[in-house]
Image (tube, rainbow, N blue to C red):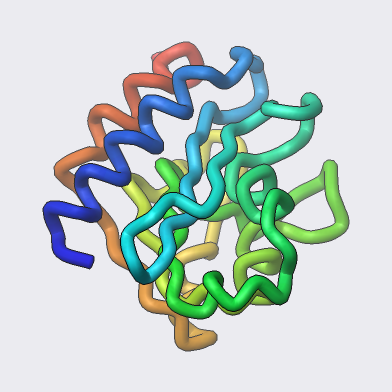
Length: 150
C-alpha cells in the first residue's frame, strides 16, 4: 500500500466512526480490513452490534480467523487498538495478534483520558506487527470524539 492508499482508507474509516452511537465513556472508532490486493474485506465501528463492541473487534469477527486473505491484509483503525479492556476477555491488540494480520495503520494514539497508559502500538510492534501512524489525519479522527475531549 502506498501512503496515498493509507490516507484514502483511513478517511473511509473516519467516516465509519461517525456512525458510532455516542457514548460518555467510550471513543467513536472506525476500522477497515483491506486485503493485499486493495479490496475491502470487512469493516466495523464502535458499538456497531452492542454497547461494548470495539471497531477492530467488529471488523475482525466478520471474517473467518483462518481466512487466507488476512495474511497480507492491513487493518486501519482511527484510534490505537486498545491494550486494556473491562468489557471483553481480549483486547483489540490481542485480537489482532491472534489474527494473521501483520500491518496496522492508525490515525492517533489513545489519550490517557479513559486508559492511563495504552500500549497497543508498542505491544504490536514488539510482536513484529508493522504499525503506521498517520498524524495528518489525527485532527479528523479526534473531531469525531469531541464530545469526550472538550
